[in-house]
Amino acid sequence: MDRVKDLASKKAAVIFTKSSCCMCHSITQLFYELGASPAVHELDNDPYGRQMEWALRSLGCNPSVPAVFIGGKFVGSSKDVISLHVDGSLKQLLIDAKAIWF
Image (cartoon, rainbow, N blue to C red; front, top):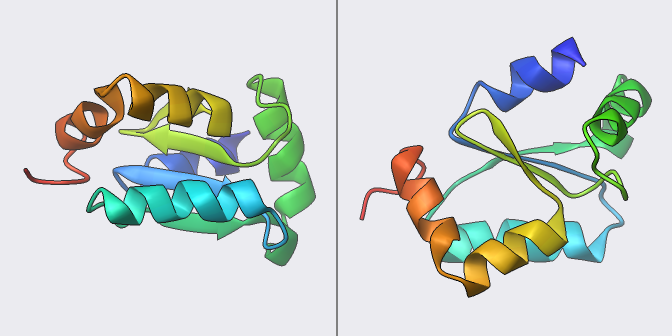
């Protein structure tokens, strides 16, 4: 859990993913399209990936990826991010966290 919290707090937008996850790719692309440049941590390519996956599940992220943090706070998984985008609040969260500047 400490590693997840540490990585999540190092950048304004952080996404924990797996290289084979299509929704992870879609959420990452959405952030790029909004002008953010998130830190992307692929759990299947990290030596501590399995432990981080369990930590993400303990936060309530099921499936464990994608897990999105904005401003160091857990936002949720793809369903939550898409809901925020549809209602227009995702962009404001990114602005408030200084992940984008417009």
